[in-house]
Amino acid sequence: MSIQIERSLVLVKPDGVQRALIGETIKRFEQRGLKIVALKMVKPSIDHINDHYPKDDKWIERLGEKGFTTFKELGIDPKEVMGTTDKKKAGEMVRKWLVDYMTEAPVVAMVIEGIHAIEMIRKIVGPTLPAKAPIGTIRGDYSVDSPAAANVQKRSVKNMIHASETPEEAENEIKHWFSEEEIHDWARPDHKVMF
Image 1: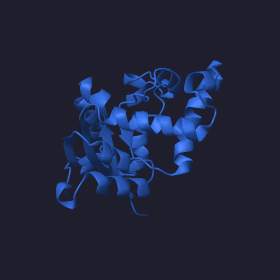
Image 2: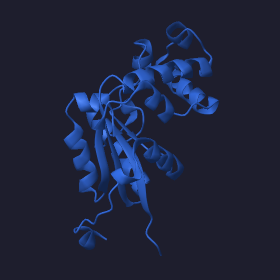
Image 3: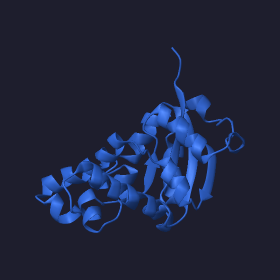
């Protein structure tokens, strides 16, 4: 039986940086036995963030759908708030707000490595929508934002952190944010007693 060692990109987003939650965020990953193999603070350009997020129609429609789902739960008319009921048009607006949000302040970018790192990190971070994230996750403990509140205010959901969702996404995102020279291979001595 082999152990699945993976790497994932994690970004402490502008709201996490501005709220001085960088250390707390890193602590959560390190306490779980995950290893930071690259770390830097970056003030990303619009082009860099624009290339970080997918541009395909399916992903953009999913952004619009998230807001519409929350509107439906709250009995809010999406046309009244967003000016459209078209998922793609709403998603395009949300994607623009997301790029604006990610460039309003520095972000802390890191590559985290460990056993089943992608799944483990996603558990620590919590669901994308903070209002639905359980207490004990980073988003559940430090954010309460929702698509409804964000869309009404014409801004992105402030959810503090980004974590790669799949191995393919992690590989692409790591290459987008880090050069090979910035990623370091090193050993945590406590891993010998952890697994």
